[in-house]
Length: 534
Image (cartoon, rainbow, N blue to C red; front, side):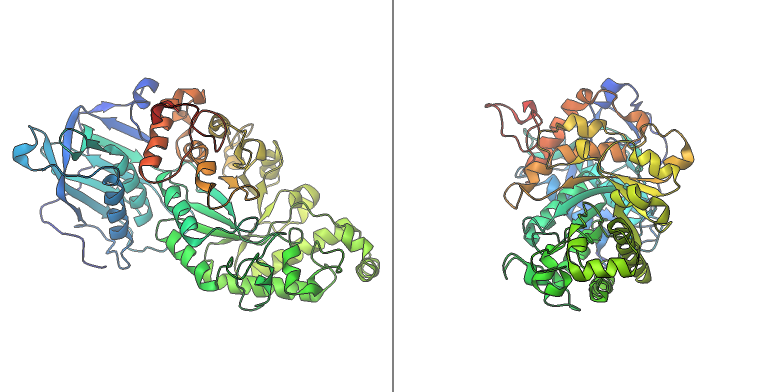
């Protein structure tokens, strides 16, 4: 793919202040139709048309696009811009009616690498000028910041129904943008219902539209173990059927597909609870045939399997974090199984102490494979002072946990179930929007320990048929909370209804089955009417 982008001479960076209206009042902001809202925006009142031969130009960029990530992102951007209607009008200087023709996009990236690193600079600057400048300009520190800029550019483009061409209104545009939080996640669950690869890829594509950057893949759970583990090939005997499985190569494909779009894949194995399916292939992982969960804490084989899984994971899941679960552990099977009860007595451990032992031993295994660990909040609530000091605590149960975690000096991710669980379909989008990670945390040092947040699409009641309308548009509401500067967020979520409605309709135009805003999640249209009114 290298060398495909066009190079032209005489182009210099255009990032100077245009004589354009700075967007300051809330009323002006809501007219922008951009989601999530950028950090700084100014615009004018002119119009430009996209050339039929709209080009990608890279002169002056240190990034040479060796693997084609930028070119692919540019092509995807053009494809979604042209997706909703057939572009059949003629776009040239003589037919533009006095409006300027935009011939291409000049992208300048200052970093030469395309390694996807957590915490790397995702900022960008985007300028769409006017008649004097036939090329829009996009500057970014990294190629992944440039991909965010392409997403914003795509939302500036509209179809002119009369001329049947793509136009950009309100030029010149000058946008400076960067994320508020480094971790902006979406969880999907492939244990409760199998999700085919095309569905997972569709979800990944839709994440890019809102600049989410972490796909938390809750791969296995009590109900099924669908992933191939080469070190322990019988584990996927716990899949629902031979066809509802992911090969090791399938998992690598998802990681690669997401990574080329700037999205990290966080893999999760939830131990020691939520693991009944593991024993379908290896029954010795169960405490007993009649008491099958949590995993057997007394057996070294249990930890050898965990080590084998994480060793295999390290070959494809390159994100710096691994999620080890640790939630909802009912330890009754340990004390009621004679041989494990004997082990507890020998090692002078209560059930609670055995739970701590299991989590900490699993953490050491993960660390040996180079991972930093994320655990659900129960681990912190029960033995927070014993956790690996690099542990990231994943809040889900209730309020106040983020404050206690950061006060203890640990990092945290917020996913409180009352506000950010997408399977709670009675939770309206306004609650997703209003959920503030820094609530009650005023100290900047403690705020720096909050990596961000994640909306969770648990799979008990969703599958390929309804996942997208359950995720969207409510996940988009949380995405703006995680991306946009706090001072630019609406205090009253209802104030952004019109802009979010436009974005929901845009998702529909791009083939994403986003549900109406009115009501909770996964609702059907209440009555006939415009997409914008639902």
